[in-house]
Amino acid sequence: MEVKKKLSYSEALKILSERESEVLALVGKEYSNKKIAAELSISVRTVQAHRNAICNKLGIHGRGRLTKWYVRKNSEN
Image (cartoon, rainbow, N blue to C red; front, side):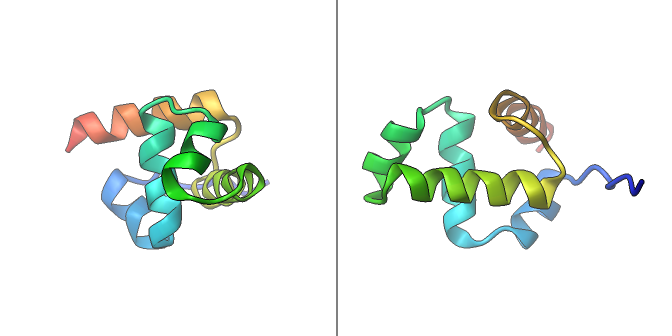
């Protein structure tokens, strides 16, 4: 089983698309999928797809863990 290296916030931004970075920032503010969709003028399903892609790229499982990661990594910078 491969263990992914924990990325810093700046490293994560390099591998995420611009839209994924925007979604991540709103997840970090604890916005719901519905609120993120409205804010970015995209569908809720698209938000879910972006969030899943972010989690896969960062090796994080679950919205709660993603939010905690964002808050922790953002406070390090």
